[in-house]
Length: 388
Image 1 (cartoon, one colour):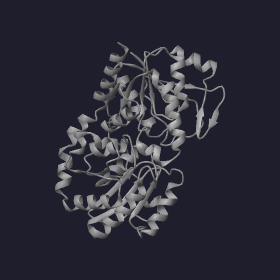
Image 2: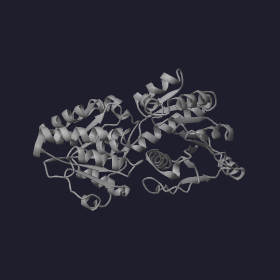
Image 3: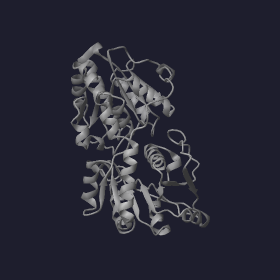
Image 4: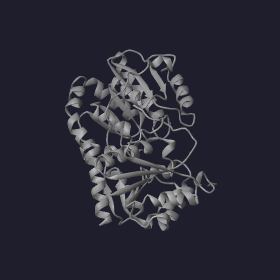
């Protein structure tokens, strides 16, 4: 089977690009013929260039012109690019992410079944935080153009399936998670090289991995919750390390909050680091924390879980809606509130080291659940069913 993954912003990087790369690699390893279609953009990738599998084709296309309006951009493929894309002759085209007008082109270019993964675009909080009218209008237009051609929607979690059904009822939906990469790589650089202070000593440290998107990732809540937990736990609680690149000046906002909370000697910002080094920062932390106000399926959470880390996770993270995850004894699923995080961190620290032992006991089961081979085969089976 020939599968074309359609993600126009693939070369710009980010979490969705990482997920597309991993899925494409796993499907290629399973024997499928795979290509990824992306606009040939000049912007540097957010987390560094993608390491593409030798059996995966990357089809970079160019636009005839760009139409920009209300923060959205539409890029009609040039004649040569249309010929390039059509000549690959896919059996299935899998679209990724939304609020992307370029998702209209697969229906015009290919007479094959289409699959769409929203990657969290229909989370209710997405419509609350900004540009509500534009987003609702987009969904209304897309329902009459893009979505009517979609034969299968793949939800990354039970929560996302609910979000899709609330807007697109009675549609064909399959729930399939994303997987985990292997934890490997070189040792991280000392944190003080990118920040004037090393996290304070203590028996249990906290770590977050991701772009410094203050609102979406709930990093203001993380800092406030960490400050309250340090007040309650004292020297039992060590430092907090935030691993990831700046996002729309989020770092300066967070550094001001660190100063306001008098946490300058306890919080470390690593800045952007190589992907292999990210995993090592993750391994050095004791408890993973993420209080996203909305998040479909952050890969950093998956990496933390398969690494055997206890975690405090927001209930707005799609991963937490799986029964297999929500019931784990070393996780605390809480509302995205600072007070809830503080109480959860205190609970875990006060139960240390039993919690650490319990977390390690669940590693194998979690690795099986987030195994890319299994996940790729689930996608391939869904494609076969749709094509049949």
